[in-house]
Image (tube, rainbow, N blue to C red; front, side, top):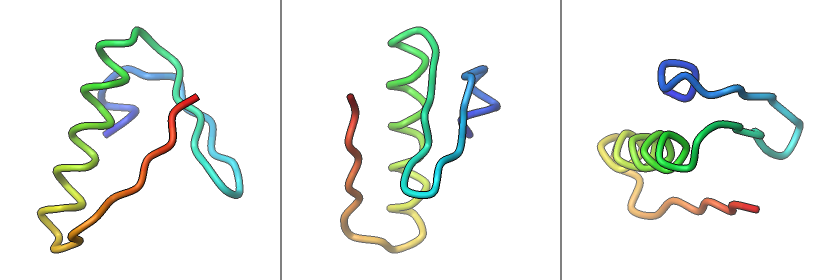
Length: 49
C-alpha cells in the first residue's frame, strides 16, 4: 500500500520509514489500518515522528 501511494519507503528491523507529502502519507497509513482491521485485528499501533 505504501509504494502504491507513491511514497518513498525504507524498511528497518523495527520500523518502516515513509517519506512523502503529508496527505499521501496519512492516507496510506489510514488504508493500512483499515486493511489490518479487516483481517480481524482489533487494535493497531502506529508511531509517527
